Image 1: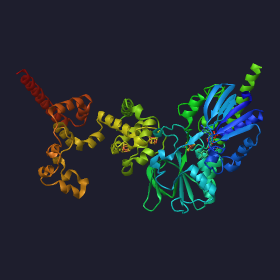
Image 2: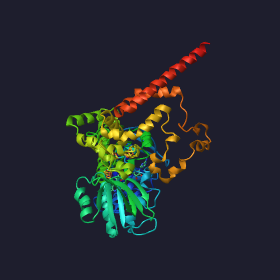
Image 3: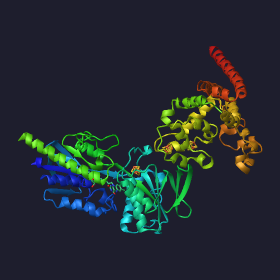
Image 4: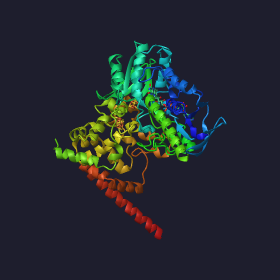
Length: 350
Length: 230
Ligand SMILES: Cc1cc2nc3c(=O)[nH]c(=O)nc-3n(C[C@H](O)[C@H](O)[C@H](O)COP(=O)(O)OP(=O)(O)OC[C@H]3O[C@@H](n4cnc5c(N)ncnc54)[C@H](O)[C@@H]3O)c2cc1C
Ligand code: SF4
Ligand code: SF4
Ligand code: SF4
């Protein structure tokens, strides 16, 4: 009975929302997640408090995981991928890497993104200096409740966050904005200050994209209540000073002169790359990729949840940089659309 | 001071260069180019400013920048390697300099005058620089180290094991054929025309020299043919 089952690939916020919506319509969901835990990036990378709710990731996403795991109509395969997909819309058979096979009428690809690897931007010091971190590492430090320099454990006097690391940069073939990192960074600055009041946080930006309701809640609040300093400059290089601090070199574009400023910790606000698995996913599922390497949408307005192949849907960060909230909304929509199309198929056949 | 129409013409010439659209895609105003630019560390010069002036078509300020600022660029192209938008501020400066020459701007003449010596050497010997040009009064920036090249250059050069490096008036020898080919390249690419605009006296000297060399070359070719006929 594949026509009452939807195969959901990827157990992040988008996939969990898709599975839950499939279940709520009375259909069965089979979730295939390649890692050993569900929850996607917020859980796998140990995010601290989420934007915009302020809830801890493990609580918020944990509720989504529990909802799916507790549903009798959901089956979860962890540590597995889809190796082969045969059939067509209404009648797919997927072979998993764990040897099992799944019959499903529709497939939702909720395979998300891959964090940008800062090693690809060597002039910004990641991998060279211990006190250069990524936002995911800094989130983990915040979650641990103690702000300290990894090199020697001292409490940092000055921390800076460099925005757009691995985004908006033709030199490394990343021509997109990752959408959420401005807000995440403004939030992170507040979290750092909250735990370590003696630490000053500076954010180096090209543009601030705290879109919609994030403007006052994050950009303004971070300045007004937490004294975060926003400097309009993109950094050219991070080097070390003789005394164990980091030197950050940029242009203060408002004052129009090159500047070199010492910091104790430099944080890269890393962007969202297309899932490194996408070429494989494109092959296995027979779906197209758009020019940046994310999954291609079937049609922007009338088939927003579709891919280039009938019966295969997508959602969330698999389509491009996306927030958790929108990934969830898209996941729910994709699950709903898959169920609706299956329902129509059965009606027609009946 | 130029009229607005003249300044507009200068900008049109810059914008009309076939490289222009390749070097300038827009600008994110991020400042990476200026932060990474060696000249910006020492001079009142900023590649981002140059890019912004061009992108916003500020013809008066572009003209102003061509009086002094554009000559501060070292043409190292670090900016081009770093710009996240893949602009080439250094490449734009190169275009602006060529247009400054075309318009016979005084700033170009002032900056290029000291290079006359190099130009002459290049045309007459095919080398930009030779040991006998390295004299203490021409290289104050070398500091006391310049003393080391004083003395008998011929003997100093002998110490270099590579055979071609033992002359004093040239760095190496350039054949007549190569020289004549170089003249044709300079002629066709407009280098000699630029030289004429910048320094007419030097151009006359060089032109005579080139004519002479070309005649030498023709004679040599004839000799070859005669030898072949025998
Ligand atoms: C540093 C940082 C902080 C962030 N903080 C916030 C925040 O506070 N608020 C917010 O709204 N957004 C935040 N985001 C964005 C957020 O991470 C994404 O919106 C969200 O993770 C997207 O969910 P997703 O389910 O589409 O993808 P993912 O979270 O990437 O989940 C995809 C899942 O699919 C699995 N998978 C991948 N490939 C395969 C495969 N081939 N087979 C099987 N399974 C596979 C993965 O293991 C993963 O579990 C942040 C992003 C970054 C980089
Ligand atoms: S959201 Fe902000 S930090 Fe992230 S890529 Fe866009 S502009 Fe840069
Ligand atoms: S090419 Fe010119 S503008 Fe560019 S970095 Fe070098 S000196 Fe600066
Ligand atoms: S590096 Fe490029 S994008 Fe940034 S200011 Fe310079 S020219 Fe503009």
